[in-house]
Length: 311
Image 1: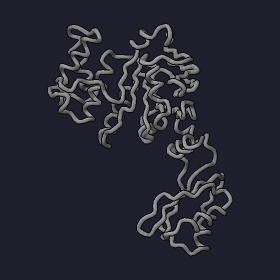
Image 2 (image 1 turned 120 degrees about the vertical axis):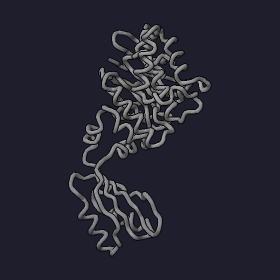
Image 3 (image 1 turned 45 degrees about the vertical axis):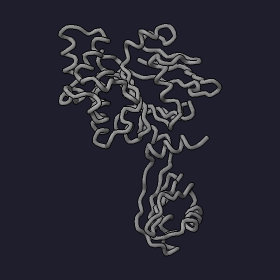
């Protein structure tokens, strides 16, 4: 459905996207993850024809972005991070305006607006002015805008940015529903959101692909690494760090939080075997008061941190 081939984009001397390549299947929900400035938005803007690549190409069905940019745009619905909606218009009037721009006419206009109002959960606000709406409802109206022409591909740039937890869940459910029929590519830096919503994840760091696969595959590819959470009734971190660093297989002891006379620690373990007995012996030998203790297998957050914090 979509093939990105050695895509590169420079802004002056700054390389925003550095020769990335990946493919998407029809009906797939792909999450594009990365820290701020990683190149996610630039990649999406090239895909939607908003920017031209410095080199490389994007293929959508039988079209390529250099020779058939208009044809590709017709296949795509795009919702940027700030939804491009007119705040002084009533929601229904705005959607009729979008329908006119998309070439819908006659009974098809009302039918499509009703379909999108139900899908995006905006039926109860159709009579309201857009500036009256919460950010969550504004995102839904923007999503209805992007879906108006019934595109085969939906591109969403940070669709849940700035939303509260309830609104995030609602937008996630809408995306999952849309993903049953459409190919969806979304960028986000909310890891739990990507894990709950996406079929596949591509992590971008400094313009290059750092990882590509399902969440389960990324966890398996990480090898034997896991973490052990330890909470101790202590104030001084350094002696604890030194003691745990002498346990073979403990690669890092990280202070997560220090408050109320307690240290919350995360021990990165790079061993196939379970190091908890040895870690517990260190705690017992030093006669430290243990508050919490447990294993935490490799998560998407630890994968993301590992891939994006290193040069």
